Length: 300
Image 1 (tube, helix red, strand yellow):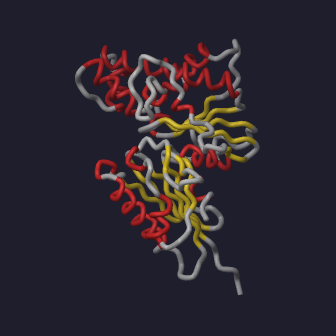
Image 2 (cartoon, helix red, strand yellow; image 1 turned 90 degrees about the horizontal axis):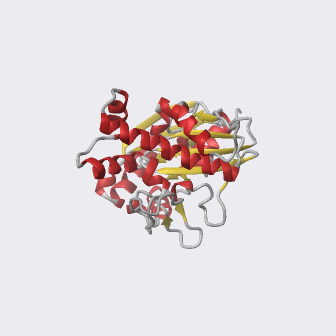
Image 3 (spheres, helix red, strand yellow; image 1 turned 135 degrees about the vertical axis):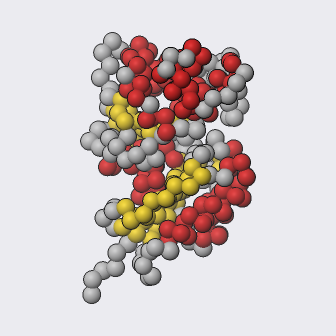
């Protein structure tokens, strides 16, 4: 009698969207769904949204087949208290997110930082494959990072390994949700750039509108976009000077901005502590939300 196939469900919970994937035992994508994250509706709405998505995906698994579930979140679960820490979706902070999901789904799940999931995915089957030390970057609603060495993504004793988004690079900068000022996340995340534009100009533009306006040569958008590129170069140049990785892989919605790999790379060259930068800055290969695959692979 042939062995029954096993399945994996991965969920990538972001501040703007939540994505789910169902993989078979050969990592073939059977279905992939993207839904809006009900962030404005609060914690309970997010929990219920994730539960519905997991159930919808699980309903496509043959009866009796084994299926694991893993979830990437924009934060981490404290191993002592079981509560979420350091989440830029602040309604998750201090909440028993994993326990609530396990209670409602009546199954064990794995929960890990979304940047760790992204880095795992890209190092396993994406742009980071074949490199020994890789720094994975998520630039979207927030800004996170993960470190992979010899195929293993490090969490660290506080589960904050790679969290470069909360290094303060401007003591006079905007207040970050973490309580510090001028964190990298306030400088090069979509929400950070949008907030800075509003403060500077008194009007609101989305990140997409800022990029489009800069490309058309609109003065205020150009200032915002050039500041963004310079902050990107300063942030990543400093990171490379500390870690000296074999490769950096960019993910998240902002990683699709072509200028990061041209003008942004030149800014990195300016700030890195070496006159011949050889670390490649790579675009993701598995999609800007590759973390959904990493979440599936860490599932239990």
